[in-house]
Length: 168
Image (tube, rainbow, N blue to C red; front, side):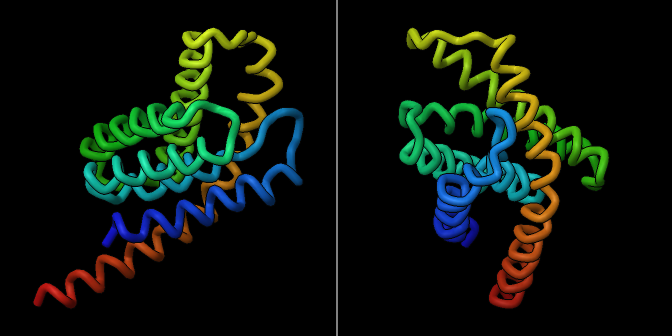
């Protein structure tokens, strides 16, 4: 069921990111709604489901952007593995941990994208892009994670309750 939910939720996030988010752009940064949705889902989900979310979200994200298809999926899969390793070590995800996850996840996705673009021959100026794109995107991600996290957590709890009901 989690894999089935990934497509409509991530399509909604990609549609919002391509249609609404550019209207609230500050500097060169924008919130990465797909990253935030994958991160919020993977905190309380199994690794297999989280990887599916990362692949679907990355490919959908790339289909509506100028980046090569699959580029975003690589960064998102790395984030999912990092989150899986970390959440196995902690009992509960709180405010501080979620804030740290957003910072690290944004850095992983951004730097992976820049590295892969650089390897394909696209000129990259990391110092300028850090102040113009990466840092504003990080601030946006820190703000937008909370409504996305709460929205997806409600869906996950509903899904968990439904699954327990049908197993008995």
